[in-house]
Image (cartoon, rainbow, N blue to C red):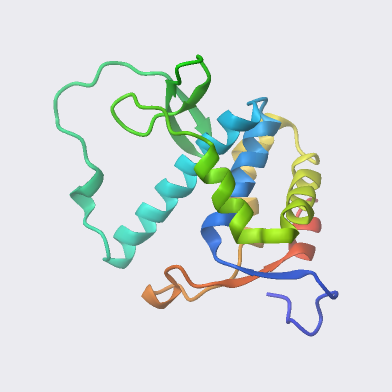
Length: 180
């Protein structure tokens, strides 16, 4: 991690990892051609899946909490985003969104508001840095390596339970220099 004293002024933003992953996943989804509402809905699913996996790894959530019954599932529409299979649903207007469970579409507005609150007035600056990084890759390649890119620039927090929900420093220079 770049020391705060060596980072350019204004390059660091105190934020936890979840909104960073949510915004990055939305940027990647848009680069893949998804419209903004779909992108934020899919991004929320990806970030939620990552958070649940970390909670299980840390022992603060049960493995069985998110398991479904063992009856054969009927085939459902999915898309892949940052290495995660995201089940899809359609809202009343036919907009494709992530499936929040039971075929209910996950609206984009809560994810968009969450990211806006987390970044505040720095949102557009962070989004622009992420979009510039995403533009260095063909869309399929970006989707394939995107999670590793996120791991490169995500805020550093303790890896144990103390890091759960903790804020770290997002270094915009790490985003800007992540591309080869």
